Image (cartoon, rainbow over all chains, first blue to last red; front, side, top):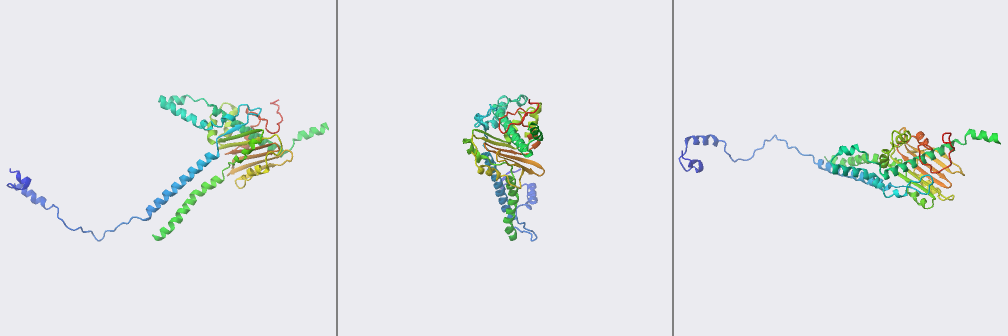
Length: 177
Length: 192
């Protein structure tokens, strides 16, 4: 079989190949203009959708900014300090030096735990060993107790003043007098 | 379409208001009162107690309370829901070291509808004591006490659900250090 016909059609043609050419030739590309059917409906995208998306994005960004600023203000409004004057007689341990260490009170336990997990790669061990309370935490606990005592004391003072002197006291005064 | 473009800004503004307004309202009803402007009194005071404990510190401290100890368990239960404990106490050597404006600046923050004055005791000799509560529905979500005595000014502000009965029972119990602040309470039989 002469294969040159297959390359450049220069040799003697093979009838089988010619037959195939005739069959497949009907499917070859035939250039013609594009014809669109008349009943096609063009669907238009809603033009306002991008605007809504932009507005929604701006709104969300605005809300996040407000939230962030409010949180920032909250933190700056509440400086983490707790001072009890050292001259107060019955509260020896509170608390002047605690001022600068307040942030450490909050951050130190989580940081330490993280370090342990990274170093030992054994989270179960860190869970099973409860961390000893830091000095700062104990300090805050004492401040909390002091604050509660003051709150309770002033509340009781108000109640006592509102109720006036106890009836027993008045009766005793009459007996003595 | 055109009407939609005209309505869009209004709709967005309305949505923004609906979202932002509750947040602003919630902030306005925050039962935390500002006490920072009283700091100047610390220079005049003989003794000062200044406690600022926010929710984070409360949650941190709660872990230190021993549930097996009855007293500590009581305090833990009392403190558990609180979001802030703020106390300022100034004791002076002389009378009139603080001004009525200092007290008014606190009082002005305790206005209705969020705050209600529960108690007001006025005494020329012993000073005034006022107790305010902030309500959220049927629950107390804030407490403020102003005790303005001639030589002592105390402001207490608890933020969060407060059990007044349990709080008032704390005095003289629980091993809380006695600061000698305020009039001496008569000793009970157990204490004697």
